[in-house]
Every structure is written in C-alpha cells, then in structure tokens.
Image (cartoon, rainbow, N blue to C red; front, side, top):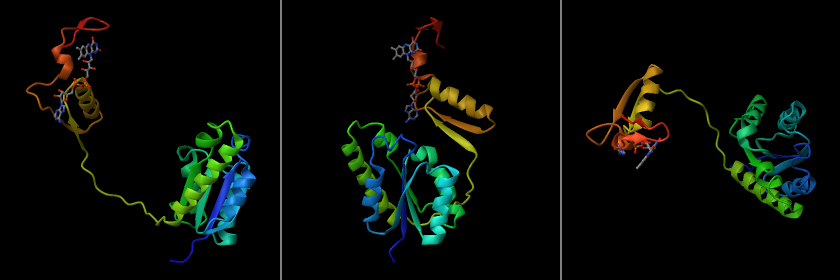
Length: 195
Ligand SMILES: Cc1cc2nc3c(=O)[nH]c(=O)nc-3n(C[C@H](O)[C@H](O)[C@H](O)COP(=O)(O)OP(=O)(O)OC[C@H]3O[C@@H](n4cnc5c(N)ncnc54)[C@H](O)[C@@H]3O)c2cc1C
C-alpha cells in the first residue's frame, strides 16, 4: 500500500477552540505525523471558504485522506464528507475529531487542552490511514415490525407502528399482555384503574 497523502485541518471555530487550544502548535505537530502531506489552520472549516480550501488542496496537493479537527462529527461530519466527495474523494476517507466539545469547552488549562488536541489529531491521522472506501447500497427489507414485550410500552409501540401502516407482530412471554401495569389497581397520578 502506498503512503497516503493526508490533509489535516485544525479549526479555530472563531474563538471557540482557539481561546483554549494553541491551534498553530497543533498544526506544527500534525505536519510531522506520518502520512501527513499538509496541515493548516482554518478560521471556520465548515464555512464555504473553509470547505473550498479543502477541496482546492485535494486537487492541488493530491490529498487522498482528510482529517478535520473541529467540532462534533454529529454537527459537521456530513458537511465534510460532501466536501471531499465533491472534490473526487470517497466520502469515508475523512476522519473528524472533536477538539471543541471534548477539548476546548471542557478544559481550563490551555496547555492541557493543546496536548489533548494533539493526541486526538494523532489518533485521527492513524485512523484515516486505515480507512477503506465505502459505497452506499440498497437492500430489500421486510416492512414489518417485531415488538418484544407486551407491557404498556410494547403495546403503545405496536399501536403506533400499526397506525403508521405497517404489519406488527407483538410477542409476550407471559399468558397475558399488560406487563407491570396490569398488576396494579389504581395508578399515580390520576388514580385511574390501569387496565
Ligand atoms: C409497584 C409498582 C407501582 C407502580 N405504580 C405506578 C403508578 O402509580 N403510575 C405509573 O405511571 N407507573 C407506575 N409504575 C410503573 C409502571 O408500572 C411501569 O413504568 C410500566 O408498567 C412499565 O411498562 P413497560 O412496558 O416498559 O414494562 P413492563 O410492564 O415490565 O412490560 C414488559 C413486558 O415484556 C415482557 N417480556 C420481557 N422480556 C420478554 C421476552 N424476552 N420475550 C417476550 N416478552 C418479554 C414481560 O413479560 C412484560 O409483559 C409502578 C410500577 C411498580 C412495580
């Protein structure tokens, strides 16, 4: 396997990250990691100019993997997957690492935060080196649901799924449905009969 050419982008997120993390220091550290062809700071990686920079670098520097050290992947993993995909890379040749919520927002000490950001970037670089391309595919599924347990939760789930138009199979191990609730007489807070 030939050595990958990884681009690392360390985001300031305005001052969200750079108020605690020494971004320039993390970039300098990333430049020395194996497989890293380019490391850069970015004021807002998720912005249009930030994404354009990544796409341009993929073309100009021949990058074939990308690490973005920024916010939570839950926030922007899709953004960067689409970005690198538009530049011709498989979207799964991306590793995002969270140096905002998991570093800048939870550490008081800047040197501790910067060291942790370096550790996370090093881990992301190692991980993305091992990534393989993935491709979406469609498979046929059975449009029916199995609900295990006929307590109130299972009964309501079965009704909701059935109301949505799907066949439901409700399985209960006891002789009757109702679960705990069926064993109670009056229930808090309305004192209604539970059955
Ligand atoms: C003493 C007591 C008093 C309570 N008082 C109140 C009250 O006043 N007001 C109130 O709102 N709540 C009250 N609760 C809480 C309420 O009863 C429960 O929150 C509610 O019944 C939970 O419903 P459930 O469907 O999640 O679970 P359960 O009622 O426990 O139902 C689970 C069902 O799954 C079945 N099951 C489990 N494993 C399997 C399996 N592998 N295969 C097939 N079936 C399986 C069980 O047999 C059971 O029927 C009380 C609970 C207790 C114990």
